[in-house]
Amino acid sequence: MEANQKPKIAISSCLLGNLVRYDKNHCKDNWIVNELSKYVELVPICPEMRMGLGAPREEIHLYHRPGEKDKVRLKKKFDGQDLTRLAEETYAMMNEDIREVEYDGMILTKKSPSCGIDRVKTIEEGRPDKVTWSTGLFAKNILENFPSLPIIDSGRLLNKDLRENFLKSVFAHFRFKQVEKNLSSFQDFHKRYKYILMDHSPSSLKSLGQIVANASLETIDRDFNKYYKLFFKTMSTPSTSQKRCNTLQHFMGYFKKHIDTDEKKEILILLEDLRKDIIKYSVILKYFDLLTKKYKVNYLDIQYYFSPYPKELKLLKDI
Image (tube, rainbow, N blue to C red; front, side, top):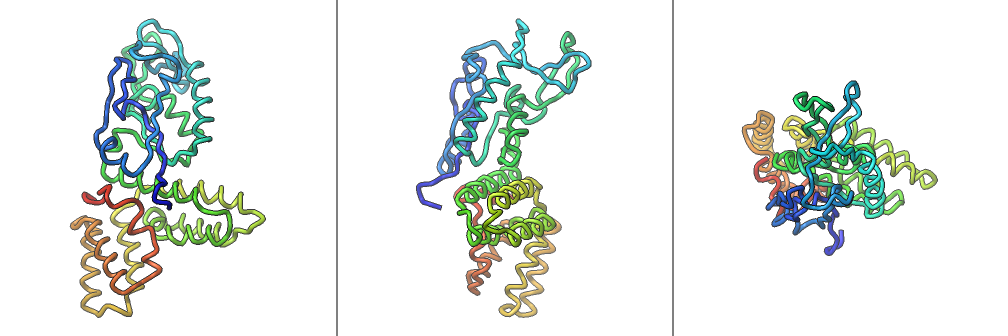
């Protein structure tokens, strides 16, 4: 990774403090602006402004027609003008921009009729009292057209586990784009992410390993694409203390020639404490990192497991 290169994240413009909301206000996220922006390139996007609605503007709402609950539409709140077709045409243009830029992730505004990932208020036409919950139309478009792109909303970003996994996925996406389409680079990427993948799904790790093992220069494009889809599907599966404990037990095999019986017992106690959520994952992770450096275990040292993103983001301090 070049020092001047950063992952690119598309982000709802209002989260950066830009005055693009319907009331010409914003919902600036200070952590994103003051901290995250140091380590990634944030590119503002706003479906409503791209639709030409301007700011300030009339509020827009999600709705569905009677008997068409699964066909969520978009309209102006007060005059009722349907904006669904305009939205779809705008999203198609935005999708082309997204493909061209090749973002590594996306952060959207929670509960927005355009950008909310879930829990967006949706009413039945003519029955404003009949409320259900949907995904914002732009967010739905992104999830359908870019299913492997790491995505989160501003609500989920407050959850320490979801935030950590999102950024881990963003930096993995960025690194995957740098992989040269040859077998050695492909194998090296997989090797370095082996234990992160194990944290999420041992069965998917095995399947991904088979893709890499069976790859050939003749089918490299197909193999890359297949690997890419399964890799980020795997990363979207939450890790748990139980899974992390199992991964770290695999690490112990690298130290069996270096640690004595008493040390092994102490490590097993730590792992059991992790399994029971008695200690933080960050504590035992640092312990294994120190063991790796102390005994010069190169295979573990080259893993992204200990440094999936810049440590200065402090994503693990509460995990």
